[in-house]
Length: 430
Image 1 (tube, rainbow, N blue to C red):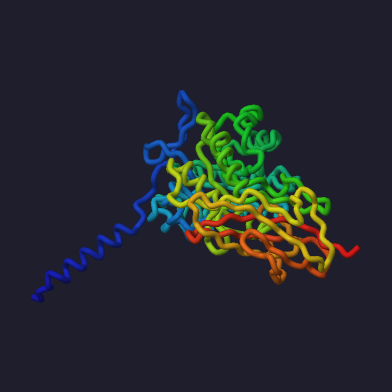
Image 2: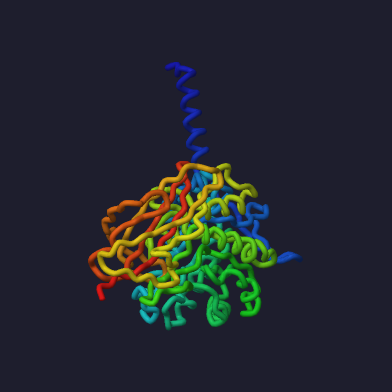
């Protein structure tokens, strides 16, 4: 009889314990309850308020700052993140990307609609018992630039399937902003939707009143929120949208979180801030909560305070203004081709950190899409600082080629924080 060394037996048992510890433990039931003081979300029998991020990057930072959930838009990205999210204590709004009319999906094509339903059925069956799942997000902004209302019937069929296959997780669909027609269509054509999701930016404050006025009686979640959208802001005379500075964005986030999200204790179950990451959408700085190099702006200070109740020990620089030739962006700055010009920004750091400035000049983006569809980043134009440049001042020559441009500034404090701003201007030769 062979005698197995005790150390090998211990190692074998330890390996089993490690595997079991890493393996998902099964579904955690998520419930919606209408109580005397309004709608509440429960997970595993305990109240659960969503402090969520829209994106799948920098999850350790999300947890450290007080977030408890993340949003995905499509099944592929959700599947890839489930285990990691669960290991970090985060839940997942599991997105099912429903075909959009603006992207060529035809809801008169019954075979395509049926194939979509069957594909989602397989996904739900496969992943419904994962403990990270919070809800199923069925469709995102399918109401954007559409005309075929049958999309809501298709969404209802998917939600009905989810209810039949998965008794543990609610269903949600998400619209672009809020409109009385969409609310009524969801109510009438998609009664299997449990939670209304809203992507909203400048119009966030007041959504609570609109939800009630438009007839929605169930719970809702703010599924995207952030700065003023590029479609909501003032424009230059040549049509360039004027982006908020990072400090202006931080002020907007603070007000919208306090007055537009946590203030509605009766119907709002929480929110997912957008975008927990970085992307090119109109500009490379408009929506991302991180810069391309991973730096954070003052918006993150606001979120950390809102989620955890305390400000970070080191805060981001505050940028109070950006001027070109003494003019603000709203004054539609025009510069003669090749002419010397000056950009000045005023920045202060709340911690007294020394600041480093970086400038970037780009042509105005012409690859503008809808609904967050992928856009290409314009190629930068080389800038040669001239005499007198330094700190918050840049002296340079305007490009020789006429057209619309933006000058970006990035101000770093050496502690992973930054302030950003940009100013659009038009180069002419007349």
